[in-house]
Image 1 (tube, rainbow, N blue to C red):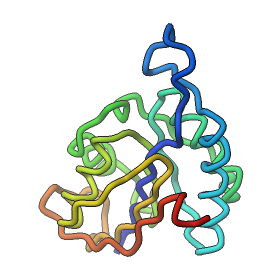
Image 2: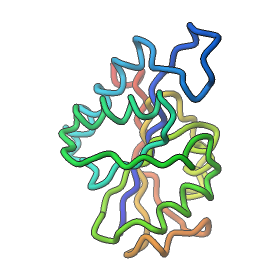
Image 3: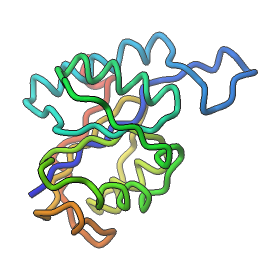
Length: 163
């Protein structure tokens, strides 16, 4: 069994209309929620073996704050293709993951992440900013991951529900 943790980037700022979508930073709530979710997952003993993040500014900052809070000591892997990716893109990238990694986290954007949860678990769930889905996958190797896998949604944590 492999475990996939799916984290939508934390809340971003819309204060500067001149910035491209890709370059939007986190707002105050995002800077609070990202480490909060990391601390929460650390308490659940769900520290990822590998974190792969979109290269968009808000996703990278979410990854940095989350990784520090959870105690992740390795380098966060950055994946340009995760920016506004479709679920199939996440799956393709994950298929190339080293099998030594049992628990992998992806950090990206909606609507792709909500669709990924639906495809992998058969459950339609809302993924607000900084939400984390915990999915068990009935595979032993990452290259076995396909859109036809029937994973199990173990939990879905939303920041507002943790307050």
